[in-house]
Length: 225
Image (tube, rainbow, N blue to C red; front, top):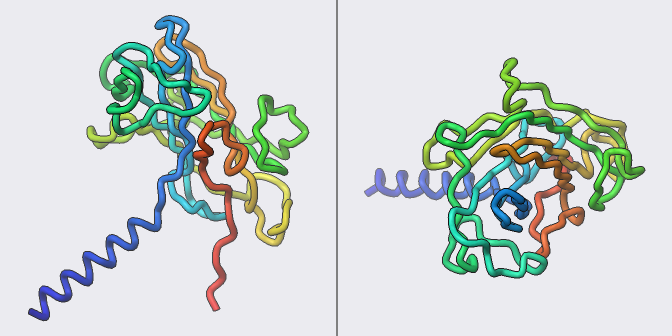
């Protein structure tokens, strides 16, 4: 009986640990002129580990699916199709973009941005941008730049790029005692199946998602007392 109790406690502790790593991402539609579809690609972008904390190893997640059915009938200015469930996606059906099969992701360039405010930007020359740091290709593998596909076939739509959350810019903001705390963004450029995309993502209130879905900005690690 005591052994069963220990097992239950371990499982409960593990579940609590897992739920702390919340997967908060911004969902966005990417149009395809080739397929005449305003939401052909459905992507989710955010930090690999949430909440994101300064001066820790983290990463960028880019999850990508494509529509293999008719274009969604949803008003994408008000809502974005569900990444995991096509039941209410207005006729669209999304499947993984998988470079191990017929898909290609090439000419990838990713800049990690530090910003003054949680405001969406359309250019790195925006006065809100403090710094832009280019992520290096993964071990010299230049086709997908810093992106690496998940090795788990269940999550073959997941691509990630590892980096430290600071120091990537000057000390700014209310938490300036910790370099790396504050507003982050990602400038992602990539060719997906012969169509080029150039997208900016900003944490928190900088999201462009019509329902407000966003990834978190970077906080300060808690000090041990």
